[in-house]
Image (cartoon, rainbow, N blue to C red):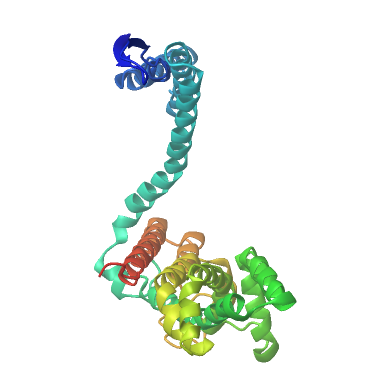
Length: 373
């Protein structure tokens, strides 16, 4: 409590004013648990859970369930930390700690299968990640040895052809929807793009096969058919990503260009597209990464072969996803050789997808508009 003397306007008589410190700050601050307390509670909860599961396993003669012990320990931690926080910090802070624990647990739970798949593929695929795997095909190979060169070449050619088909169509469609499309036609195109986004990949393969079978007869298997099937899956992804990027371009840039007398088509090519090129390129790279691992449509349309084929318009063509499937499904003697090739091709496919995602991020950074002077 503070006291000060002040004078009134009409005289010199001092007036005593009492100032009381605000208690709002101290009420809001309250008591807080130490930073070590949540970690100590978590460690104690896991310890109690593992001891309990260990005793149950010893009594029943079974193995210790690590997953069950971790889950029970996490639930016990949420219960204990919520009670402690309610008693010390209040109900609002207790709810915050409870929700934070749930979100963290959900994140860790989602990371478990991802890490497990990564470790499994790397551990099993490194056995055949050698020079022979990258410079030889499966021609005349019935047992050990051989490689996936023909599958890598087929994946490269089919994906490149699908990109050449999909990018112009998807980009021009998105430009129409953003810059020109009005009325029922634009709504219909948007609806069809949404429908295409959710179609199963096997349907895209059957569609491409049916189209080419009408002209070339049943049983057609070519790389270009697989490229058309993949383009059906790529086009809606390119349209959606490009459309969102084009809509982010400020209208002030368009209006300034129109005010200078620049026609609309030149405004799009010189102003709108360069401004959004980073996001468009990123969307295209992610669309490629999305379809490069598709197996079902390529199994129907491109088939599989053990030899090299550089011609998209003739004969069957192997791809990495189909190579993984055929090596695993058609195991010969010795079986471990086929399994090793299958795991190595799966590892290579994961590496390619990861590189494409990293490349998309780098391209987005390189082509991003520079705001500094």
